[in-house]
Length: 347
Image (cartoon, rainbow, N blue to C red; front, side, top):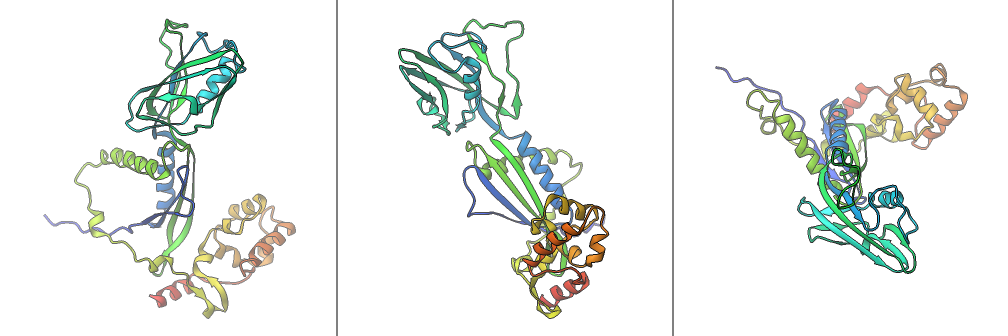
């Protein structure tokens, strides 16, 4: 039986923006991607990051002196509901992923903070300055916390048919995930003379219990595990037949001096109009008219721009000022075929 030959795929280079990388924020850049793969991979990774990351949180508490979440607590400024809301904001780093316990005792006048909590050895408290409650003089606040691990959101696990528990435990609804926000942007980049490849920029914000690098590793592992089960035959060895593009094949800026466009690069013209930081109104008018890249915009005449629906003289002047900062104008008439030829000549 003849073995079928497959075309290779473009393998992306991945890098974290080191200058801005912290325990709570990271920007991952993947380029070049096959045309259209930016939105495919960006959306898949975003959905997994938002809904499937594993973490640990306080799932129930025993607050000495009360047996439900609607009580007032003697000698404490906050009532039970306010205290529980503060408890939900405790950020926990679980080194082993196992259940654990924590305890807080504050006697006398003072402020109860996360730093006052003693925890099992495998539990590390991250936001130690977070305030839980204010205790009055001569009073005492005593809380036992029960920590569990899970994914996504979990409603309070109250035992069925029992409103009050024998041990006075109060169950909490929790969000286990360390993810606070995920955003991604897609720009066009080039490989050799081809200019329609994707560049994915994925921004990840966490609460500090897990780093952006670690949660990305987890998300990719989840996706890979799930997708493997969709294979009906042996996996096609794209990693073996594909190669990484060289750094200069897609990163080196190429200026367009030979076209009379001094200081303007190929990459700039291929970027989305978002780069110009336009107002929402002007941006939406252009997008609705299918003007998505800077090259599409500079190839318009002013008269053509004014014919765009809801794009008036005020928007025109705003766009002209934004373009001026990059050395761009309307009516530049730059052909994509010329860009491809320049890129080919540079190879």
